[in-house]
Amino acid sequence: MSSDPGWSSAVSAWLFPSSWWPLLPFVMLLVAAAFVVAFVLLLYMISPLISPKPLKLNGAHVVVTGGSSGIGKSIAIECYKQGAFITLVARDESKLVQAKKEVEKCAVNDKQVVLCISVDVSKDYSQVESVIKQAQEKLGPVDMLVNCAGTSISGKFEEVDVERFRSLMEVNYLGSVYPTRAVITTMKERRMGRVVFVSSQAGQIGLFGYTAYSASKFALRGLAEALQMEVKPYNIYVTLSYPPDTDTPCLTEENKTKPLETKLISETSGVYQPEQVAKVIVKDAVQGNFNSSVGPDGYMLSALTCGMSPVTSITEGLQQIVTMGLFRTIALFYLGSFDSIVRRCMIQREQSKAADKRE
Image: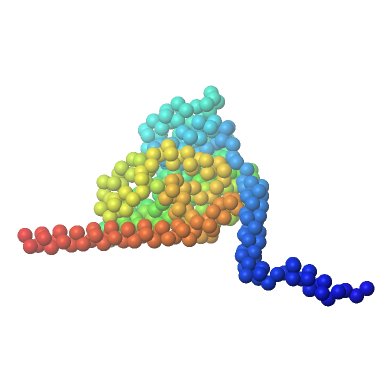
């Protein structure tokens, strides 16, 4: 039986009416959007399956360098509240003893121990290796190392003593390399561990007055990214923290000599308490997150500067992709305001000098 040409034409006209063709781009857009939504939902569903298993701090051995004050001490307290055994490492023995008393007040069981070790983690690797070995003999293998030892200095590039560039690299960079080197072999043998590097928002963006400080903190990112690629197959996760200005003795000391431009730029962001920062760092370290930021400014900076840094989950990667353009636009306004601050200060300084000459 031959098909009826008239019937076929009628069916075709009903399925593909000429009035539909203008809507075709819209229909294709809807289909594409549906595929994107389905893909995103699928990623959200499988994301928990590829994320690292959280580290349990109850009974874990946590070593905190720079643990006698500031963020380091607050991190030790936060871990102790979760049942960890703590080794505090710092140079000043009297401050260590005081910090130990403060940490011990937060015990959750009578088995917990706080061990104090006085050593300069930036000078002699063999000495650092020796004291870490002693700590492991007393409290067991290190489950989490928090590299918080550091110092800061601000000043114009040509006014900072050349020796300070070297000393900041020793303390802020090598002071993290040495303890990490001392624990990483055992962590790889055990197929578990966490390593935390405490950088700074000045380790994400170079600012006026921080030519020495920013360089030493930027160095930690290169170390953290390369190390994470090496140790991830061994179930070891690295966390790189970028805390904002935090109310610590180090910040108080830095403010005494901080240039006006640096002060004005710093004031565009708030000052956080060490307890707030410590809670975020510990949470991210336990989860195995690579980037750790505090506050909305910190979140924006982390998304902007993520580059080729590792991601812990697909969700994190998607968030960075979606927000990158918007955050870059906002950042341009920030950079413009920073340049304006520097320019105004320079003009005021030159006008002041001219006035002094006239007098």
